[in-house]
Length: 165
Image 1 (cartoon, helix red, strand yellow):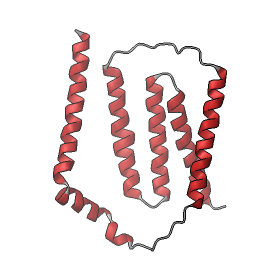
Image 2 (cartoon, rainbow, N blue to C red):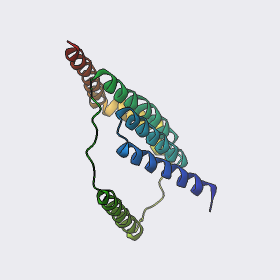
Image 3 (tube, rainbow, N blue to C red):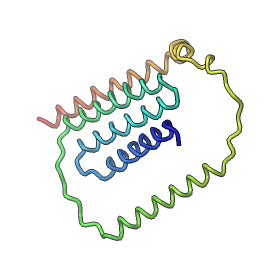
């Protein structure tokens, strides 16, 4: 058992735990924080895979921007805390069994699938090449995505202002 395996195990348990907490929390703020925790854990897994650029982008875009955007959306809109109805105790057990069965099937498929491939020269897939592709070939979709995100943010602010009146 290597240190890399232990680090991967810890980070993967943290990522799965954050996702499970996000699903089970009742307050939206706690859900957003659990999601940010999951994003940080995934960035750590990217670091283990020697994908430093993707890890930094994960932290900047997802952990930073998406989480903050979610928190602003939560704070700008009005919402009421509603209590959940009583859930039958067997519902939780059945959900846990279904999730465990799904996990078992996915792991069985992963271990049974042969992964054959040849070694790739990583120098031809570097950050410089990615930057050239984004800003030369895909500049129009890149700019359209940024404009779309800006319009969504302005729309959320306008909708929140209308609710105040």
